[in-house]
Length: 367
Image (tube, rainbow, N blue to C red; front, side):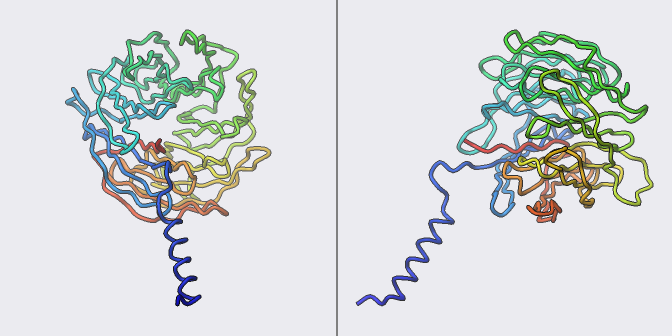
């Protein structure tokens, strides 16, 4: 005779096992860290339930001997290819195939870049790679071949001083480039069919003198743009007209922690996938600043800053929006934070060793 309590206990155990066991077809998430001085990429498997990182691979660059000043990364829209920009001669884009089952990287080949590129990004189709040269004062467009390797640049366009970020709009109709040394953002019309850019002077955005516009992102709803300035750590909010490609400033706040009196040196910014929270890294204070986003206006309310890795040039937010991973160029480490879903406050969970001079993080959910 089986007792009722035994049946209930067995049912509970089976239900718990079903909850904890991976579901068929459930996506696995991986984190990729670009390491400039060791010329490689640290690959981690990421547990979205606990925030734990498990080392999977160190993928070395092929055909590169000298370290560059940074290692920008870009993942193709179909998540099959990861490209790393090499900022030492020869200036190349290293293409890696992403294994859909293991997250591991396999080198495919190298293609030429127009210069030492501080930033690289795919267009929304994955058929071209945009890049920006800080020292070369230029932006470029490289076709991406069917095998994932970039071909020679189809366009190389001079810009103002210190082009830094170069990203397409959500609808792929426009591309914008920050000019850190000229305090402006340049706008281009983009023809995805031909992979060509046309400069549009009417889309130029002027920023305050010596502010140094560096990185920008679009809000997930496509209605707002957030622009971080390196030299004064200003964080500006713009309303974005998707039809015209124009920016209209709505707010200007700071990524500096309260009471900080040192030299600003802001770096990176990202929003959670649901658009509720935004974060910015600041290297002068070695902190990450958090902000709550107003859904209607896009305006920001400061949450506060948390200490992080030394010289936090790059970070990323996982696809669930529950965790943030930041790397330090000087500390050679990565720290993971839990994002409080109600307040957006960051809580440190654990730190991990990575390669030398890490500066870029990408999360990818597979398949």
